[in-house]
Length: 265
Image 1 (cartoon, rainbow, N blue to C red):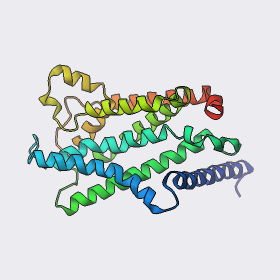
Image 2: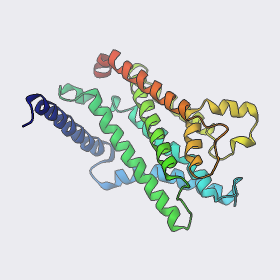
Image 3: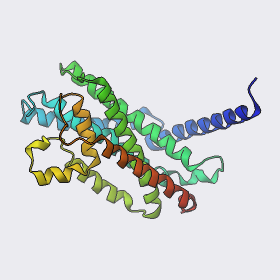
Image 4: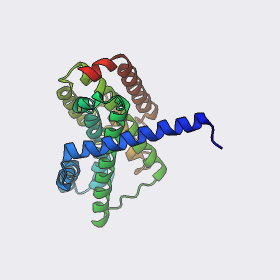
């Protein structure tokens, strides 16, 4: 027979899950409307981003420097953007767009962030699945050489995205115009992530600059699952994971210190 303590913990967990599920439904209705059209737009925007850049690359370059289909080379570079920066930007707006909910004591900051995280990554993975299926139908071999490496790279990218999103939530509560600055940072991270070029084809100074970009290591890690030996000279998995862990720690500490501002500002 379960103890009273285990029953209490199960009750608390059940309550938190119910609150998060309710917040997910509310968030989807307020952001996407009651029809399916709004959510289709949320899927279509990043999907159009992927299709356009891969299509342009395929048109300009019949074969990439690695002697492979340009769709794979560019898609593996753009994938971290879809799985990282798109969700992180929306996670960072979770508190600001849901402030009225904190009038209800049952709703916590964690609940709001968790619900937004789930929505964004469900959307991101739907985009990836649709895009990958489209490439497969067109005859592009999307199967990586090492599925384990590919999965670990995707999980690391998701971890980095969540960490940046949580930290962005705290910064937004202090600096309301941070959203604009974050978009600028997104563009810079994307520009220096090596999406369209091989890092080895660039100057040493440029490679040194790119190395400090965590998103660059997301790209290198994912591509290492498709190209044998790729990233051996520049990829640092530990740097990416430590960057993500540091951002998450700062975000969680910041949430504790500015909780009152998060709820009342």
